[in-house]
Image (cartoon, rainbow, N blue to C red; front, side, top):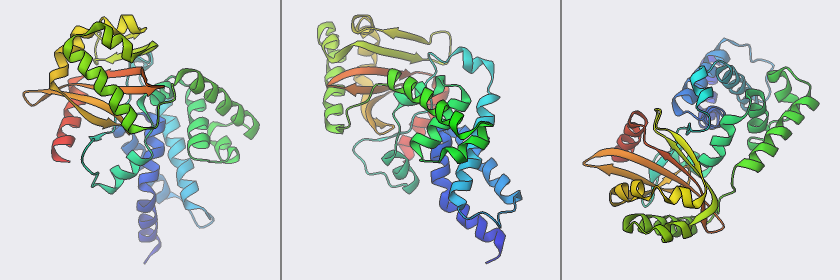
Length: 293
């Protein structure tokens, strides 16, 4: 096997890992694919004869590509940080995942609540946190990517870690418990039972609506969130349980058309965060994947 074919084979062995890195960096499935492809182009043009750890080298390359992409994102994204929901990874809840790559992604899934917080980080902080805390890349290897010393890079990751710990609720890991809480929420929404709805919500719940338009909004507090029960009750009869980034959520369709995707973060038996996506342009591919998957 010649060197080019060998490199292509080794790259394919690392593709799922590289996609996972890029997804956490960018919060976008399509952009993650673009970053991985650009990483391949850079690898193909490079002299790798001195590279001893190809996987580690590729990880830093995709990190550098993602950093460039984050820095050049349009200002529109910056204006919508409070309400922008990253691309969700959605699978059926009661069916086995047959796609090996999807299985890997779901097994190592990062909740949307965490990805939302990552969206608010400056690019260099996000890179340092993702590569070090999520993928154990040494600071010595991250430092050249962000043009900092290892010590300063460590400080970047530390700042990011404090922001994440202060803003992203830690979900209950028990999927059965998540399902119980989400089903209680769904039952209350179907009945339009305001008190029952409030009882399942954390008092300091964060509710984020990404409609892809001026209708997007951010709401806090159980009573305020529950006051939107008329919206929940309208979609509840058309909702079914799904897994969203490895956590139990709801996907609603009406007459075959997707209308909403609701991701829950359950903490201490209460719903601590809801991320509701209603942008049709982003829901349609999810519906298609669930139908064909």
